[in-house]
Image (cartoon, rainbow, N blue to C red; front, side):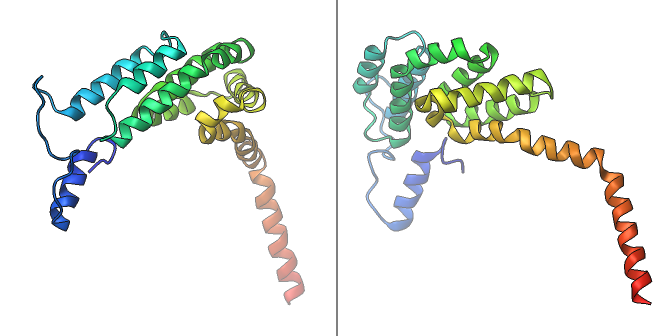
Length: 199
């Protein structure tokens, strides 16, 4: 079971196993409009997410506050994150002027995406990073965000830190690829020396 997608059914199974009364989250009752409360909440968060870059921050805050999400902590966290993103829109705009535009566009999409989609997008972005200019631009952009925009950095600190740290790993891999024969020669010399002094 995927906790991100099946939280309500997991809670219901837990309640049944422990012999507890069904919680409001797992009651499964339909409201007057014919959809479950969770479905309505998911759709409301989805609508907020689709308009997050258009809505003024105060409207995003109002829209987030109007959502009935007390019963759905995962959706509440998503709404709070979207509200935070809306409040940081001016930082995103300023960062877009300083950092690589392609990187910032990808970063905007990643921070606003649902968790499972964001993971796929981050992985796809890292796989597309070719050595050379694209990689250097992405790394420099991540450094700019870390140095000048800590609020933005906090939204995806792990991913941005990974991009910043990739240079060291790539240099090490490149160094090993270039100098593999030196290691073989050193090993052979070491074995000969050990053999010579061992006799």
